Image 1: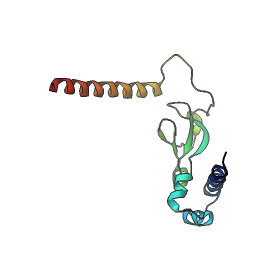
Image 2: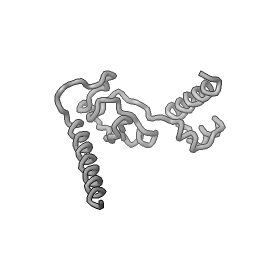
Image 3: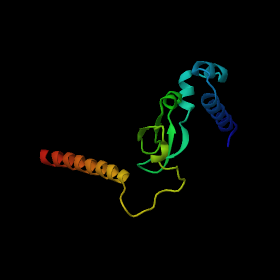
Image 4: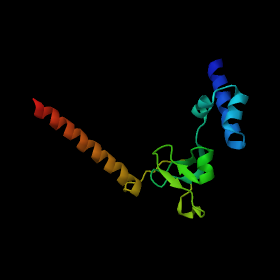
Length: 133
């Protein structure tokens, strides 16, 4: 790791800690780190929680402090957004292991429908291009 990369890593870790572990304003944190507010938002990463995404099984995360305050969880892997319930028993605990079952789950259905839509769209474009000739 180069000295510049090491410095960037330390900056990102400090920004993450100040953002998630304090109630300080984004402007105050950016001033303290001597960076712009936009750069701070670029550095900040979603804060993972110990709840698995019902679609893909990856850990859900709070996207930002506003999302955390509103109970909005997102999946950084598949983009699913869910509202955190008062009783989280319906959401499975996050697992670091990927799903390896041979059966289709509800999350797979959405993926398959997206793939089907992409295939149909591609076929339509190819058809229109060939028809012009």
